[in-house]
Length: 461
Image 1 (tube, rainbow, N blue to C red):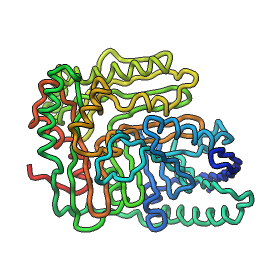
Image 2: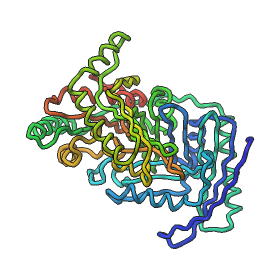
Image 3: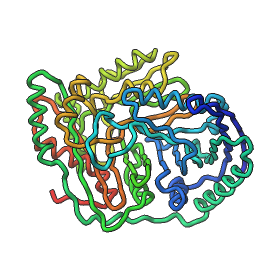
């Protein structure tokens, strides 16, 4: 451990009517495996961990334990309430040093008005955590922070105990042999709501033909049963290995692990500059390079997919123009190729206006037409009426922000929820006037593939 910083900050949280003291210490350590650090918390912190790696692989974030959680069921105000509490908590933090930044990680559910019972019952509409132990791998350096938020002014003894545990966790991650995880053994699967899903495609196309919406995204789930309980590190190891070109994430809450490998950035803010990705329209990968190129060219020239993509570009561009200056948008889409699928992709960027923030952009951008539909209100009404499941965090924003307003949120697609010995996979597609139930169903099978493979599952197609 070469360098050490120490910072203490006293915070007043008016809503609780008390002074809270925020103690933080960050050390730089020899580079270690993020997954091994995550796994080191299996016994003590299972149910209170998170994992994140950006698509470029320039930042990896792991959290063990909860120094503080921010959660609410505030419907449309949930973004504002998270932002207000986080700003209050970190208003006195040291600015200008990235390695000293406390990081808040979590997500917002897709639709706070969805109360369908199932695996997401009881999950908050906004759920974020500041980790007790925060690992950040960035620029080939590793930093481990301790966060302690307490009413106690004299917390030396408590903090010293945290230091000792931190050193044990680092030692375990550095010294123990990196575990090789096998894939879980799936015993069966079923398709909840398959018939209602197929029926919903006809119902939604009729709605669109009646000019009550232009596009509606309808999703479905796939349920897997395993021979035995599946551990979080076991699953994360599989997606880290298999989906290196995607955003990788895992968020635990009690018995539930929500994880995925998403190709799609919702928004990133770095030093006041905002970035987003328009990802909509998809086709499978080819078995050869020539076949792959032919599929890609057909996607670029396909009017249905091109129209779906343009809805997303128009909507994100409007939000950026309202919140940013110097907005840049390419003339047309390019191809984004990941292991199982290729997408139409258009990047958007701009300089944030004064007062614009990452959480405000997240609030305005969610759901994009790629996950909700067009127009937004009509599409959401159709989803509530015809989609028989609760998406939970699927297709919703998941990511992080620091005390300076930097951060990044991905769209949580190619994702699944793991609960003990069961998993629920999610996939959907954009329905337009000429959509056909069987082809939409087949598209979801392609989109299930990344998580299905990570979970060791196979479908009998």
